[in-house]
Length: 518
Image (cartoon, rainbow, N blue to C red; front, top):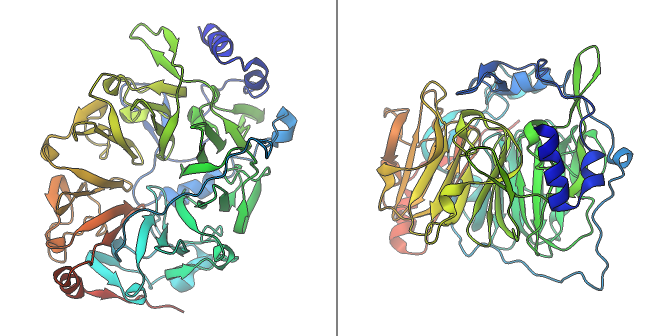
């Protein structure tokens, strides 16, 4: 069956040589080799790599013994994407049309987040951070106008983009993911000097790596690169300062990061991926696994941007049909899965299928982008997509919010998109997911929920409930209009509008956060 499907993919996409040269040398079904805490996926026997809320990053470090870098891209014949200058378009991307003041709440001891204890190398910073149970203003950023905030469900670092297009970063920095040329943790945002002459319009955070996109469509990457997630043509421990990815195609318009992989979209709507191919998360019809020696699993990583060429639809009986004319407009990455939104308002998902996060009614991994059927009907297409660590969201054309996957693994999974009834009638403009918590900006309110344990990322305030299994308005932000919300692993960021004297006065009443530094 697998052979027949592979042959179909090759005929449909006319990419026979490309796929066969990058198929894993041997399929592995019994040896996991992930080294982390294993849990059964809902509805299946296959085991996945999932982590508890307090030891994810420790377990990830242990996995480096089994997740060895694979072969360089040149061995498979892949070269960086190149387009001649005479047909390459010239573009100028715009910054988001919002501005406001930065607010933060949640865990701020960046080196401890997701760990049982602070690593020895960062022990000097052990007591600097704290859990902020309610929204705080960053004291050092009170005069900075922010147009975008960036983090991710796997990330313990954050970015902000000012209204002038300058990129700032702070948080964990063990792999140079802050882009300052060192590995020193930062308690408060700091301008990335290496990009000071660029106008940055978008960015993305993985577990330990970062992508930044300039107004001209160039992507820079920095941070960990053991699995090729920086797209710079090699696999090294880390890159401490921003460097362009190895790509000379049409200008890029979107960037996104999973835990250890990256996605970029060009101005023609083509999707490219690079990094770790585990679970098929790169979309190239392969999970990249092979047994190197002594039952050790390694990965054939993609170290340069490679186009995702195949998009499919599957029927209930498993029949595969090609989906043509897919022009990608947006992309969002979870820990090990990806969603895209195309020009016809269709949603595709692929990668790790555990807990139903792909929305296909089954927990199977998908090696190539597969159509999520709920949004493939007239008037029911999607307008926004979002991903969490183990879940996915979409807003449809009528403004309805849909969820699939899981935020609490002790509860039943949602295997296909279902309407979020608690938010029926709310107009969602921004949504973000942490490891297991959700924050939403809708109408004039900020809404959040998430299971225990939490670290303040829900923003309910001191001496208030610390968790909630249902959507609750964040009362500490009453009167504050959130232009955008963003979440890291266990912290939340908000861009608060301050256009009127009333809004400015409300913000002044919020406590100020001035972290200690060494």
